[in-house]
Amino acid sequence: MSAELVIRERMIFEDGAILEIRIWRLPTSLPPSDHALKYSLFYGRPGKRLIGYDNERGKGDHRHYEAREEAYRFESIEKLLADFRADVEALRGEAI
Image 1 (cartoon, rainbow, N blue to C red):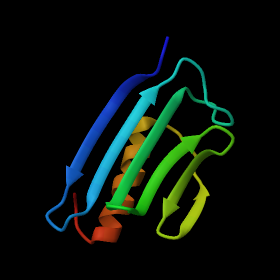
Image 2: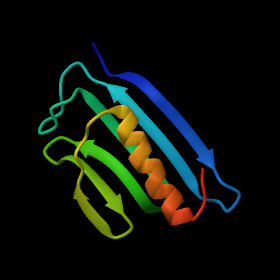
Image 3: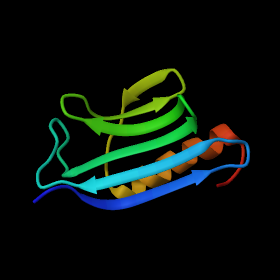
Image 4: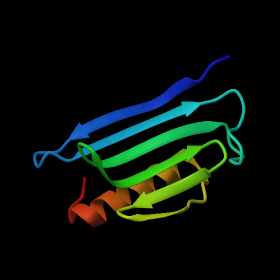
């Protein structure tokens, strides 16, 4: 069984900012994550990430907020999306 795309969403804002969400269900977890999801959530401009949430083998779940990178505690897809949207809204200064 290969990865199954669960969510794919892309928005381009009037100011040129891009929001992209991609989440896949995997046959097994991607160590050191203990869930069987691969995700990439991006908000920024072409060539410049401002906010990002992702996980990768060897690095696990983490969050990028402007120049900072920090561990992220994954609980559920719903919580991941809510946390990401809250960060984007805080940075944009408006609801999305």
